[in-house]
View 1 (cartoon, rainbow, N blue to C red):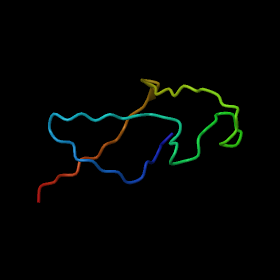
View 2 (view 1 turned 30 degrees about the vertical axis):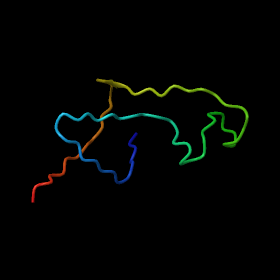
View 3 (view 1 turned 90 degrees about the horizontal axis):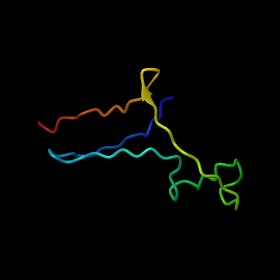
Length: 71
């Protein structure tokens, strides 16, 4: 599965760290996800676990292109 997050950019200076979060929703930007198939404002919700596999059978990766700031 490929997830396209669209255009994003950040300047990461030497000794800075980058954190990548894997989540199943983007509330409040998008309607909340109840994980039941019901409407977003349903009282019934389910807790889910997001799993990111990284082994020889499921080689997940994040592609981060580097753009030079030199002229």
